[in-house]
Amino acid sequence: MKRFLLSRLSALGDVVCTLPAAVALKKTFPDSEITWAVDPRFAGVVDCCWAVDNVVRVKPGLNPSTWPSVDGEFDYALDMQGLFKSGIVVGKAKAGRKLGYHWQREGAWLFSSRVLPDSTSLHVVDQYVDVARAAGAHMDRAEFGLTAKEDDGLRVMEKVGELAGPLVIVNPGAGWVTKRWPPSHFATLIDRLSVEGCVCVLIGGKAEVDREAVEQVSSQCKVVPRSLAGQTSVGELISLIGLANAHVGGDTGSTHIAAALGKPAIGLYSITSPQRSCPYGQINRCHYDAHSLANIDPASVYSTVKEALA
Image 1 (cartoon, rainbow, N blue to C red):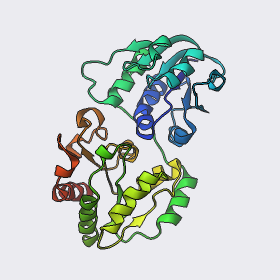
Image 2: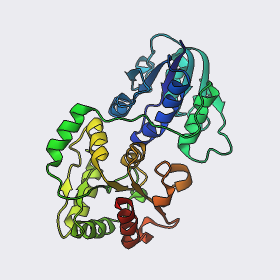
Image 3: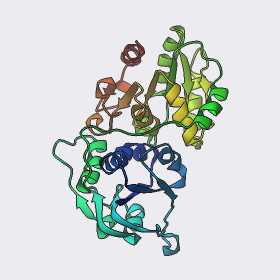
């Protein structure tokens, strides 16, 4: 039996995009044991992936006393992040071979051998799978293996309540301000969808910037949409998006969750390349303007949402 260790600690969307590497390994080696080291904040994603057998929650810091040692011996240890914090997990692991994602920073190259992506691997998901391929895995098209948990689904149903129309999840936040569509544009889109009978639900994290983004959108809507911002665990967020008929957001974690669940994901992009980081397999639903997200017209996004709902 082969044993694999994957080290991908953060962040939400990046952890989601790395899941196909685990699925590729498990489908190629069905009897293998796959262990994943992840930041506790994002462990809920890995917990929902059927291909992962063991989830190890780690949070390495600058102090060596915080550097984790994952128990056991592995055939391969894979640094899927290319940072010191992910590299040190691989560095301390007992493994026959240690491989790493090609973009190695902060000394990550000290702990693993870099795997260059195939020339056809334009999307970051495929580049992560290339690391698994270097460990013997086979996969033609990425599969995420993401499944919502029943208990999370029941709690989400209670929070959402009755749905009188198609459910559209809207995430106005993102890690960077430059990745956020203007609140007025989101409000225009939500108002138009609401008139059409859609139920729009705002989501976001618990951080102050996320709450502010949601409040700015809500304050400009003619009919205030429902909001579950800061009210869901990662597992519940996966369940919520699993109920949706469509998701609208920028280059952020929930967009990649929607793609992983096979939900229509309408992406809004400017400073990041859709070819590399669009919702996987859905570049046709992305709106891109190299100069500013503000240049993306709400009317064109509305049309894409309506096509997805149809």
